[in-house]
Length: 127
Image (cartoon, rainbow, N blue to C red; front, side, top):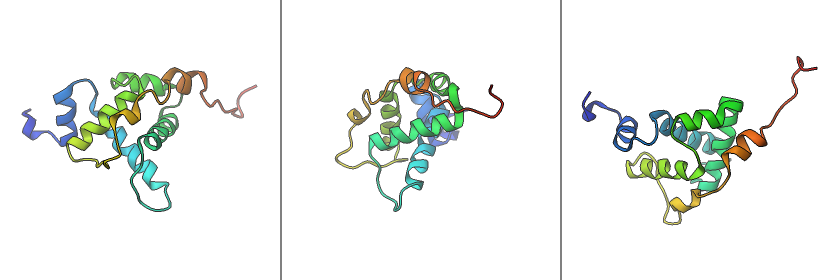
């Protein structure tokens, strides 16, 4: 399949090769997730997006969140910044003059938030 036949997200994933298509789609879904919870539609910061990514990841993938992200090529919050700014470059997301890829650097540790502090909930089948 030629690159002209690919959708913009597939082109981004194919051109870079570090991150799977699913990672880009997840970031776009996370933006909508975060914006959808606001009282009014507005631009969200990198930190707000990363908080939404963490919450959405845990809701969708549970204890497998870190593993899923790693499968997609994502091992740290900086990777989400790379994806966001690639989406901005492709005009699939927008940014303000105050936004920087550095906003995504080292915001949280995946082992800590997805494994060590996994939000275990007691279910009725547990003893």
